[in-house]
Length: 246
Image (cartoon, rainbow, N blue to C red; front, side, top):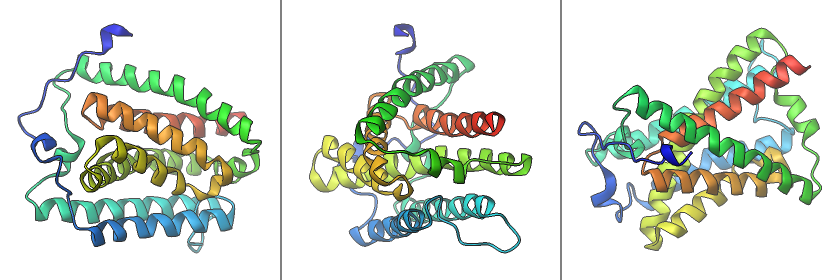
């Protein structure tokens, strides 16, 4: 694993955020607007005991939940894109880094798998210590049909890209700039990440820890790419395993 710790070569095609990292991307009210749909989804998920569901007609509750989350998360990313565009920045400036070769990609893929290997037992241990039973919640959201599995994979890609951009990218930058501390930025984004998963109940604490681990990886690598791979891959594998184990 030590051989995989070499930094990715910086891209010349992306605006690097390092020189402006002490400045927020957007004003406070924009962050409120970003957090609002996330908070609404979290409360709805807690109330509905599963993924937030807009009850789209002609769909099962699971499919409706998948498409609800996909639509809301891409809407939030669109709001962030507007704020970046206003400052003359791109989404790439927030993601940072670039895969210059297959070796660079597989390096980050290895790191993402390593994070999963660490994060899953840690989260599971915390959930056990909290005495929380998540089986019933998970049973309501994992795919049951082939089409739901395809939609789940789309949800996993969305979660990997959008949630990492929102929490480890935008919110980490905002909170870090306002507090004057990258450490506080990392801590606060993890708190927001946990609170954004209301359907897990008390297990939100485990989600917070997972968010902190993803934040540490992003901070160390100075890129969201490994975390995006880890996040999307973990969600996808969880859904596929649940589908074939039913």
